[in-house]
Image 1: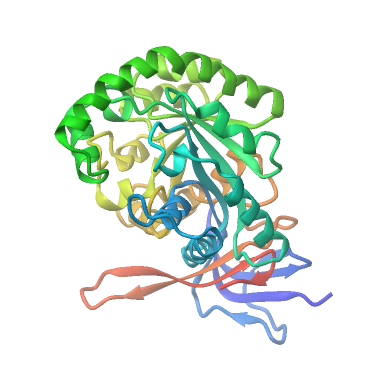
Image 2: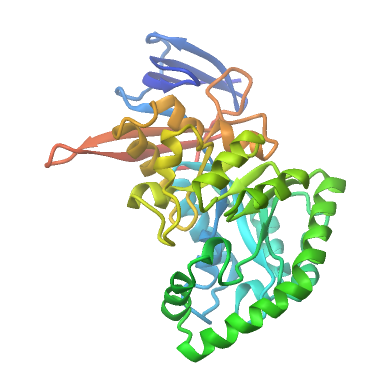
Length: 384
């Protein structure tokens, strides 16, 4: 079988960056060596970085393509193909598409069934129309009355890799600052001030009735089906302690330093947003991801709502002297892969999948650099 050889590359390995050569065969990495090669028809990367394909465990980007504007729904296949192309262009070769279940608003994606979307993912996968390897991350809104009913299409789904437990009740967790919640819902969602006040009052009633029984249901589902579990927007040590007791593997977007430290002490991987790093802080007024990285409390970066933020965040952490390139790269490759139970990818190592990203550092007129994805391979096949 013909091998694909990449040479004159800066190979980003788990503990170092090495100028060298990588050989891929049958979709797997066959060898990783320092130095150049005399092999004919090798890809000369001209000193560009070669990273493992990025692994994304939490992105709302597919939902954004399915509903590009409030109450405007897009056809499933064009939305998926556009999302997939954007993901691949960002260097992401494995993506857990985050789809939310549980919403009182019937016009919301998260308040309707996902059957057609799941059928579209299956069809596009079977026909090899997708550039990235797509899996599922179901985000469960615990206080919503319809959450368990809307989860039904995902029950036993072979691509379900992660379930996260959410509670967006204003006044707690992400929206502990009620004014931040007001700004978000009246701005992005277009709610009137009167509607916001009504919803705040109603949300507290729903939380009291549904949050705990729904939480128990999904915790049990993850235990009995071997699905990774994540908590979401942990704010207090008590939130983390509960998630740990329930068997959670990840704490997604902890809102405080205390919660992130508690997660680290209990072995939960801390997930923070790439946009948080790139923007220099949280859009919700919560703890900055870079501050957690400085204290050794950042394990995984998620692009959240901007796929291109993953690579930008990695380079920002390196540029600011917070992490080395191998350390920063691990937050978007090895660590998220392991958290989702995917031990076959996430590193440049023999035997693992040949999911690869060529990254060029472009010099800009002001003297700064911009990371540019030049090419992407999934299981040895060029997809970008």
